[in-house]
Amino acid sequence: MTAPVDPTHTPAWSELAALRESITADLRGWFAADPDRAERLSFPLADLHVDLSKNLVTDEVLAALLRLAEQTGVAERYAAMLEGSHLNTSEDRAVLHTALRRPAGASPTLVVDGQDVDADVHAVLDALSAFAARVRAGEWLGITGKRVAHVVNIGIGGSDLGPVMVYEALKPYADAGIEARFVSNIDPTDLAQKTSDLDPETTLFIVASKTFTTLETLTNARLARDWLWAGLQASGAISDDDARTDAVAHHFVAVSTALDKVAAFGIDPTNAFGFWDWVGGRYSVDSAIGLSLAIALGPDAFRELLAGFHAVDEHVRMTPLERNVPVLMGLLNVWYVNFHGAQSHAVLPYAQQLSRFPAYLQQLTMESNGKSVRWDGTPVTTDTGEVFWGEPGTNGQHAFYQLIHQGTRLIPADFIAFVNPAYPLTDDGQDVHELFLANFLAQTKALAFGKTAEEVEAEGTTGALVAARTFPGNRPTTSIFAPALTPQVLGQLIALYEHITFTQGTIWGINSFDQWGVELGKQLAMQIAPAIGGDESAIEAQDASTKALLAYYRANRK
Image (cartoon, rainbow, N blue to C red):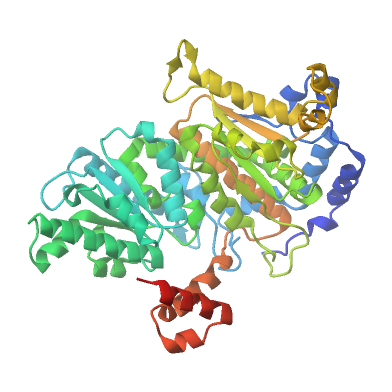
């Protein structure tokens, strides 16, 4: 892989720095002077309508940003990713999450490192779909002959955040009477609460761990196995070791490629669904990691989700940069981070179903682009990454919007909404969804255009209250609208942010596909664990602060 281009040494970067100094943001004035601004800066992306017009950009800024994308090789690097080049340089791996959603029969066939990737992907997808269909039809039964009523996914990171987000978003599509639950935290409270009201005879566990060694996942899997055995023994369903082994085979499946470890746990390896080292965890919800979704929502809905992903992949591949929505949004993020000093980015879905979408994006964006070295090991030359956060509207309006509207920090925000609700309800003749959307539209308008002191005074406010009630405006937002939150639309939204993340990482010259920053803490935890248990030599090996905290723990543990 060639060395990354230093963006700060490109002509476009110098242009952008000069434009930042010379242009004063004036969304009111820009809209007044350009009646076509909204239409010109709104773009279709599959089923999404994306309005970029309330961002702090002029035509000159957008042109310079597009030149930055060209000069840093965004399109070329995307093409290299699609063909299987080893963009993950620190692990010498291809980056092929886009292959997970290539349709059957796609041409030309994708062969990477001598392997037919298309054949591999569709073999797993077909097996996953067939298994999900058996569970949904009541053909897969627990050890006592009862059909599955609950599926519990045990994973962490990408093996949890993706499935739980998609399940919550598409819960109206759960049509088989099977509820999905998700266990991730090693805090025993998580498993205890998620299983407290379940019947062992009708519960199916999915253990999602590529290597079948993830500490949190395997700990929770063993606890779940103990819970299963205890419950079945209490009801008289099993009594001996052979029955215990049979129970695991009936109530556990795996998403893993470590078949020997899967078998040692007691899971039949024929009920293990694999994925590949070219799929990063945060990019894996459309792999076998989505097994819980295929069961709860159905294989057809899962394939529609994949089709939504692929539509955006094709948009990025085929669309010129000036109309390429994920590239444009990634460039805007670079504009705010590197030229406006923005340190965070809000994602504000006006859809309760997307309540876990901001948390999902936290891993996708911050684990990908939270880097201080470039893909060749040299230090970065710019700020990289931003803190992604958010909550559904209108909840956020009554919590943190104050900071976005009138605070001292610039916080770009993406607003997401849907024309048609999953649950159309009225209140005394008022369409509640329309009232909800009025808030969505009002917030982006208020952030863009604000409220002047003269407008406040015209309403009769005087004195010190005038300043308190003045809104500066010029707070950038992007509005994303879609007809409804369907599986395809959700796939499009996820892929949109994947490619936004890719664009930023390419411009900054970083490897967005490794995550070494998570390793040190895990290593130290294994060293500290004996100390918590009272091992004196392990205690003595700790620093003074850790020793003091260990002493507090030992003094107060009941």
